[in-house]
Amino acid sequence: MNVDLLGRPTGVAGEPAIGFGLFAVAWQTAYGLVHLWWAIDGVPDFLMGRESYFPGGWIPVVIAAAAMFSCAAVVLSTRRGLSDAGHYVLAGLNAAAGVGLCVYSFLFPVIIVSILFEGGGTDSVVSLLATGGGAVGGVLCLVIAASERRRAAHPCESCGRVHGRSPERREEGSPGWAYAGAYLAVGGFLARMSVWLDDTVAGEWPSAASRADGFSWTAMVVFLALMSLAGTMLPLALAHRWGRLWPAWLGPMRGRPVPRWLVLGVGLFIGASLTAYFGIAGMTAWVRGDFGGPFLPLLLEMGGYTLWGVGLLVASASYFTLTRAPCSRSAVS
Image (cartoon, rainbow, N blue to C red; front, side, top):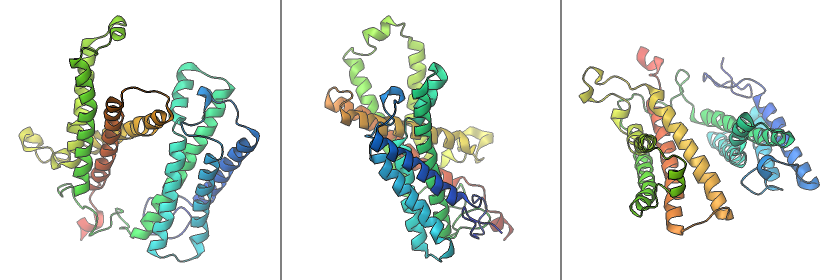
């Protein structure tokens, strides 16, 4: 018998092991207590002078408390029968807390890269533990949220689909929101490139500093070509049928499945990177006044990157469901 992350029978394959929920509660509690101590007694020295792009103090304490209570609510519900609506509520609470922790701990990958390439002292270790603790806590909440959503949706025991509501084959068309996400990404890319085109026409690109540092036209042409593919071909492939099945003009490859992660992996990576770097870190730094410039070019650049990233993530969500392996039970029946 399959069990969910708290040991409850679900009949759905792939659920986390028993005790996961209690571990998550303990983790969120420890993270919250450490930040409560820092809020009262003062924060330690962090690499780059900060733990997060967002204000510290009581904010991480509040987020950790929300995460702890959300995880605890799931633990307490193990012996009580909840309606589907109740499971959806718990999924939403844990998802919100998980996103909050991950967003607050956005500097975690930056800290890792900094330590790998530059080394570090005590401030690096403290930053790594603080941001890593938040990132792990966020992932724990998101895993719990996914588990609660599965319990509410009553998916197939074999494939995890909700038959009748989830796509069954690659041949099926993408939903309207997937196309909206794909063309939102294209629009964001075009908005960003409009700033580059304006700078080029005005003679401000490449800059004098770039030319002095050995600017390479070959490297830039390759970069712009790849960037253009990521801003046009990639989002369209995530939504349109030819991104899941090779199109007719490829001859022998016609109708064969496109390797799933060839498209999905790139879409998720670029979408998450653009959304996190420009949508979260960049927008926050702009609002905080960490950098400035003419409003419209900055809006087109930062907003374009953000919409590009969000659009890719939306389209990738549809591609993920459409390209799952066929259900074995449906094949047998």
